Image 1 (cartoon, one colour):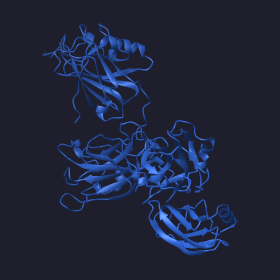
Image 2 (cartoon, helix red, strand yellow):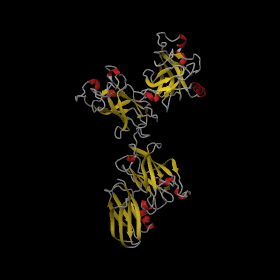
Image 3 (cartoon, one colour):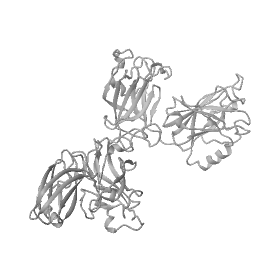
Image 4 (cartoon, one colour):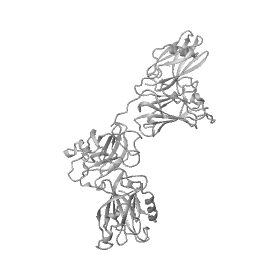
Amino acid sequence: MMKNKLFNVAIFGVAMLAASVTNAQQLCYGATARDYVVGTKKGSSELVDLNRRDFTKAEGQPQNDNTENFVSLGYGGSIIIDFNGAVLDHAGNDITIIETSYASNDCNSDGIERANIEVSQDGINFFSVGQVCRNGSVDIADSGLAYVTSIKISNDDSSTTFDGYDVDGVIAIAGCAEVPTRLGCVGIDVFDYEQGTLANGGPITDPIRTDPNRALAVENNRSNGAANFFSLGKNGWIIIRMGGNIMTDGTSAPDLRVYETTWGNRPCSSYPEYAKVEVSADGLAPWYDLGVVCQGPDIRLDLDGAIPAGLPVSFVRISNDSTLGNTPDFFDVDGVEALWGCGTDDTPPTRGGCYATCVYQDHYVQGTKKNGQPISPLRIHPEKALGAPENNDTINFVTLGYGGSIELCFDGVVFNQEGDDLQIVETSFGSPACENYKEYADVSVSLDGLTWYPVGNAVCLDSAIDISNAPLALPWIRYVRITNNDLLSQTEDGYDVDGVVVLNGDCTPGIVRNNPSTEIVSSLQANANGVIAWPNPAKTDLNFSFNVVETGEATLELYNVNGQLVAKLFSGQASDSQDNTVKFDASQLSNGLYISRLTTQDGITTGKVMIAH
């Protein structure tokens, strides 16, 4: 039940009149008055005076002066006024009711004139939004409706004047919009269902109640004998596919309506039937909870606060909740409607490649050095963060700097699967440990490039990222944002992004060297005591090629990013006259970054390799 509101607006008339004139271009007024019920004078059977019964005086812009510019409702009286368009639910009050009282607009100074206010989308079914005394305003949100087209004003018997509430006009504060198309998008297919039992444990056998397709076409008929629904039964549920992706309005206003049939239109208080309502992108997990609702003639739910921004959802699951109510066959589904319609693009997302391939809308915020000086021009090319990471000690990266960030995109989506999904590859010459070279970044992901969800705060150097760390369940993402953590970073110019690697799915690595070639040989020759891993990233079979300056004892070891020894790859005599090659089975390693360490009598050389099964 809606909480009853009393709006007692004092000294309102002059200010409202000025606002009406000033904002005449923006405001929208009640256009057509109808269904005027003439009431009586206070304590009498005599109707209000004839000169106060012209209900057309409640139409158009209120005069808001002390003339007979109004219609008197009288006791027991009411009137309906239609707008020429939809009055949308905005933040705060949406409709102002102007009342004429000759002496004052102060509710208590010259007798009380109160009215009960109801609003409607279809001009037939009205819902309370509270009470006003003299001039007052109401909030459509109190009705649970996303928009209204009509208002009903009824004199309240607590009024004390001789002819009750006098209506001069009504004003849509934020104007009127085009009326949304009704029933433009409803359920078109039963994706899956399971009918439960009667309250006594027996099966539901009444043919009126067992056809799940009756939960598709909305009839909105709650009269006795209506055969327009599917009974869920105890522990029962149904998944309905909509005629497209459910459109939302980006506010807390309702986006989805569930139609339920209870014969005789009995209220929830006397006939409690409850259900949980959820939505999904593909009819599978994750499901996003919209809440538990009780049967009623107007069940409306908001999606914006429940689903990730930019996620298209087109499946609705309704599950009976027998813990809150217990009727013979429980919640009865008549249909589901997307109040703002459905989008036509229901193409499922497709997986992209293994690497970030673009700078989203050229978003690279170039920070500064820690001392406030500009970053070297060699380090401010954002395209160096794209494609397969070079993963070597060259300027193969873009430097974020202090106050800097970059937003990268993929040529498809990155699905959220079990375990880590992304690897942020950072370049710090010599592959130092984090505790010795503190470069930190914060990582966020997005579906639409507008709303961002944190998935990794204060990651240091190379880091694996699990999309499941987001505060909402994200089935996939398209964008990643990397921001230098100015508080924790301690190096001269902050975090350096070499690339972003996708760790899940059947990716084709961007650096594949299945046959050691001249490229590898020349690489090794360019670096004395060099080591290269290939393919990189690797799935299972991993090869290491290394050479040494002088023949002698050598060890080649593999460490994880925490500095723990994973495998000893080679220990023995290494010749300076040839490339030394080691094969390694990496199938048992977890996805992520690993460090190779070659130790010879001439020193230590390290390298990086990515495992992406």
